[in-house]
Length: 430
Image 1 (cartoon, rainbow, N blue to C red):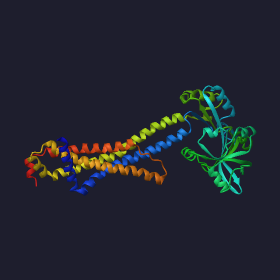
Image 2 (image 1 turned 90 degrees about the vertical axis):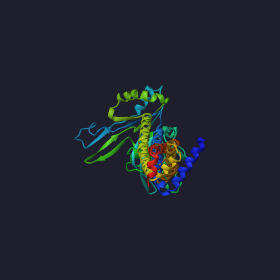
Image 3 (image 1 turned 135 degrees about the vertical axis):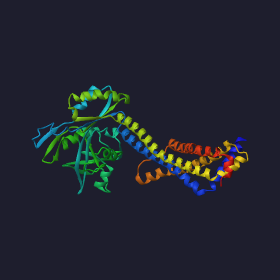
Image 4 (image 1 turned 120 degrees about the vertical axis):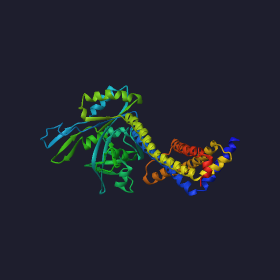
């Protein structure tokens, strides 16, 4: 009996809405756009958070990155000197200090020396790129994928051979359609033989987000043995500035320390910093802990999604106000109908159910249409912007559930107002 009465109420509600199709559609627009905006904004925010977290994870949650930092100008030489040599940053001796001091915690280290804005030639083609002097296990500890040939090996390191591995982008720029393996390129004043081609994953985005662009192409890098870099390219570079220039002497640009256990990373970092403070000034280096960055990024992502969801939910609130406004107008318009129903024996609960069902039907249909559009919009955004978007089931269910809740909440007052009408006064209404 209850289900039959409910079924009849639903039928009457839908029939009443179909009598005013345009008004019903316009009423649903607020819910449609509200649900759509909630899903789309959360999908875009989820995608952006996912990309940021992936970049940090590529650095390695068990790794600690130590980078050389140039101290403020004047701290390594007198202010009146136009030419001086700034000797700062990490040293090869630091690698041994870390290995010996933290041998129970550290699995391995990766030392690098980066030469920026280096000119590279081959058959008249010239590209400005970065030269990364590194160790053979760079391939295992960094986001790179070997495409052809081989990476650097221990023999290259021991003999300081003039061999290099180039990125696929640089290979295309220098060699066009020629096979780069075995070819020789001129790096600065030195000649290196290409033994491999690799693809970098994340280099462009990571360097752009860090503001590290320089003059060189972002993904046109050359990898050479660390020993060959020191022997052929040197550890001194010339940096020009207004009024003069400086010579910078830096043995290592970056040192990656991989720990045996992820849980030991944050606890060991203070001791690692103290060990380096004994041989360096505090402003000569910086320590980056990806595990801490990851935790902070996850917290920021949660706050970001809450803010986006809150902003988008305002559209649902506006849609609910629109539904209540239309239903109040409908109650006034159908006052005589309500009076007739009450006179024929309809109870207040039945009148409330009729108008409440109408608002819920509006909210449900609007919510379903909004879900369909909300799932489609992120795909369009991803197609045209090449940015990752992620539509989650939780976002869809939350948006649709809120739309139904909005329909119920904002439909109660008009329904109660309709049920509270005096039957005699309602019958006199014209």
